[in-house]
Amino acid sequence: MDEPPDLKRRSFLLGKFAAAPQPDEPSFAVIGQACFALRGIACMSCRDACPTGAVRFELAVGGARPRIMTDTCTGCGDCTQSCPADAIRLSASEAAS
Ligand code: SF4
Ligand code: SF4
Image (cartoon, rainbow, N blue to C red; front, side):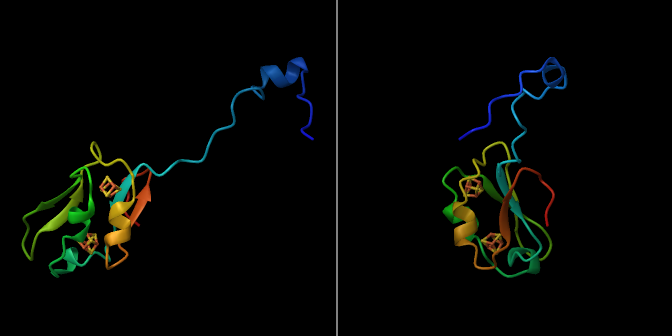
């Protein structure tokens, strides 16, 4: 059985009735250094798997490099399933691991 809420004025003033902060939900894909394309090995599996076209490849010396368009990525995770290098993770931050 749930505990009854603490209705003391002190609890209210300390914000204890506010909704508890939720852990960050993954919101978009982030490509890490294990990516084959970043190592010069041709691979576009993530682009092919993405239903929203959020994976773009940009020309670069050594081969095209993938880039996630965070404005169109929905965080569905389809690209993570298709990546042969296990190089993609979902994150709420753009920082690569
Ligand atoms: S998480 Fe989904 S929408 Fe985002 S890049 Fe991957 S496949 Fe595309
Ligand atoms: S599927 Fe994985 S290895 Fe291939 S380009 Fe995308 S991130 Fe890189």
